[in-house]
Structures are given as C-alpha cells and as structure tokens.
Amino acid sequence: MNFEVIAENLPLYLSGLGLTVKLLLLSLLSGLLLALPLAVVRTALPGWPSRLVWVYTYVFRGTPMLVQLFLIYYGLAQFEAVRESWAWPWLSSASFCAWLTFALNTGAYTTEIIAGAIRALPAGEIEAAKALGMSRGLLLRRIVLPAALRRALPVYANEAIFMLHGTSLASVVTLLDVTGAAREINAKYYLPFETFITAGAFYFVLTLGLVGLFRWAESRWLAPMLRR
Image 1 (tube, rainbow, N blue to C red):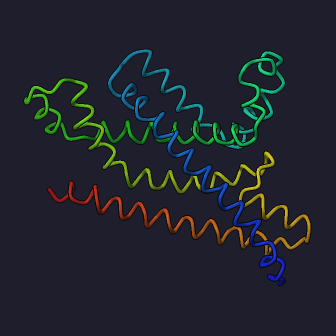
Image 2 (image 1 turned 60 degrees about the vertical axis):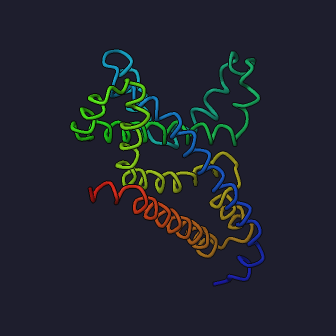
C-alpha cells in the first residue's frame, strides 16, 4: 500500500473536508428552518394544508436522494423556461443544486421527526399551558416546540449522521468534497484502497464528532426533562 501519495494529496482532502462540512451545516440548518413551520402545519392544520406537507415529505422520503439530485441539477436544465428564468444562474450551479437537494431531503425527514415529537407530547403539559391562558402562538413558542425539539434530539441525531453520509453524493455533480477528492486522486494514481479508506476515515471522524455533539446536547437539554 502506498500512503505516501495520500500524504502528498492531504491538502486536497482537507479542502474537500471543508466543502463537506459546509454542505452539511447549510443543509441541516436550512432543513430545520423549513421543517419547523411544516411540522406545525402537519400537526395543527387538518385538511389540505396537512396533506400538502404529507405529499412533500412522502415524495422526498420515498425516492433516493441521488435521483433527486439528478432531477434538480440535470433534469431542470432541459426546460427552456428554466434556462431563461431568473433562477437559472442558481440552478446551473452544482453547489446550489447540491445544497437545495440536501436541504429539501433532510427537511422532509426532519418535518416528520418534529411532527412525531409534537404528537408525543404529554397532554398534561398542553392543558396546563392552556389553563394559564396562553394563546395558541405563545403555546407553540414556549411549550410545544421547545419540548418537541428536545424530545426529537435522539432521532434527529441519526438524521444528521445520515445527512453527513449523504453529502458524499455531491461528488457526482463535479463538486470536490471528501469523496470527490478521493475519486480525483484515485483517477490519477489508481489507488482505490488507499484513497477511499482515507475518505472513510474522514467521514468516521466527522461521525464521531456529531455523535459526541448530540450526546452533549441530550445531556444538556433532554436528560433534565426526562428526570422530572
């Protein structure tokens, strides 16, 4: 095995690591911001608003993220109306399309995670807040969403890890993330074992970091709630 090549190309891996972390953080943040209102609609507004959210989450959870990425990056480009629209400078960018795909995908999963946590809230907490005269908006802001987000932490941690691994798909649309760096080095030197095991090591370290971060968050915000 020749790890000297890996050492020589370590700056390329580090550059890819920066892009991977950037895509992950932007996607998770965007997906969470999208999921919060949609989860409220999913649980609090029966009828067609809830059904529309269900269709969105069902489609994005029921199809592979690679297919979604291809449809957004390659598929939309075939329509002349898209190419002539104001959105084309964005939709012709691989970075934007990767972020959009990842955000919509994780947003769908996160919507269902938060909606499930809202449904699982003890009825006593809601009734006590109502007895204090809280309005519906105040109840959502101070009781429902904070409690639901805390209870959703263990499941959301898994979604964040899955999203980290999913960012490796960015390399198929020419982005040089960690996997893209491994593919480029392998294409140049033909060292598949060394290049991809190094990429796997980067993802493993990132996964350990995410696990540690969410365990700290659970001990900080979830554990005190469960001990009550």
